[in-house]
Image (tube, rainbow, N blue to C red):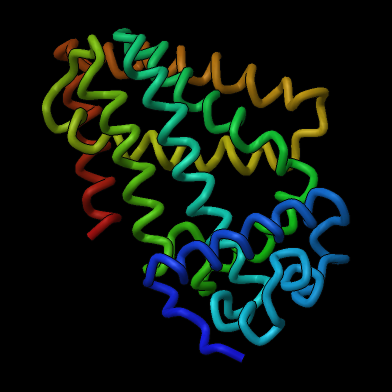
Length: 225
């Protein structure tokens, strides 16, 4: 048998992508629990040993899922950001774009996030291992803010993208548990939550509100440190 290509080579990336694609298709067809690494390897046309060479375990496909979702979300978000200039429409559009991309995976997403919810897990969205995907997602929300009509104190605008990402993570958790048709309740939460954030951030320009907002930003910076 030929030696498997390095995961970082072009052929290695293609093989890993084929494994991830096969896994996601099988997850949709059979569910996460009933899908084995052998079945994934067979579907991808590689040996079981090669499958483990490129993906350490079935659980580590969660990170691959994050990465693929991030790439697809970034592409859809770019369409929204190119067309919209108001902060509310940019924010709601980018968040809805994520749930459009994630829709095919809703049935088994709970299994993914169950493993990722462990605080010490390298698969947590807050872990050092997830930093590239996390930073890429925060960068999208930074574009939402920077390219919009939003006016607010500089200290708030600096911290706002990461706060929007944290809010987005809350929406994702809500989406995982949302059993309404087409996750309609999540869509409603995105629209109304976005309108509330828009109003609150714009209010921070008022002298009486600005001081409180800056205190909140100070607390956020302390917690991050």
